[in-house]
Image (tube, rainbow, N blue to C red; front, side):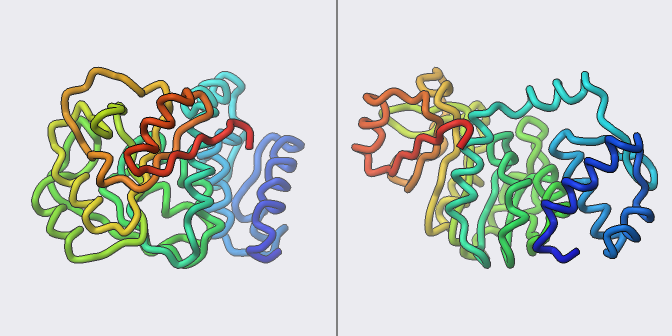
Length: 256
């Protein structure tokens, strides 16, 4: 079964798992006439989607209580925003993915994009990228570890970023200020701004319920942002006000 049939193979793996109660890497590799490395990527991807639980040498079904917990972690709005973001990525693009739960929701869907170069300051993003189909060229900023944002920050990371140029930056935020731009609780603002400087298109991913949060730190002004991808709950007045700042506003519909 070729790479083009990856979704079909993964669907078959879930069917086999439901029938037998467990699957092994070596048996699946033989059944689908593919490598054990490919099967491990399949199982890792399916686990990241909350469809099974990895165990040594294979996988078992995910307990129902864990399925419910997994589904609650990523809202339908985050998923819709992530899908819309991935649609904007061309094959062989050079992109930056910032740390954050909304940007991380993009990762499982990047497997269909061939030839990507991805820079990130997040260990979680880097780990997830290694498990997708069409694994991209992965670049890490390095730098000083910030436990608040669970990412690398600081001058070293900024210097690494400035040695490259990128097509797109995908970045989240803690809040949206209609008058100013995106806001954050984190006082380490330098890296986000450098990411924006070295990217031809800056795309902010954020759920609409973060609009109007009282957060003092301005992360990116509207003048630095090209596109805002949010969800369908954003009210028309706020959408018009943001668009008036020269920002393309996309309201992703949940379920599309």
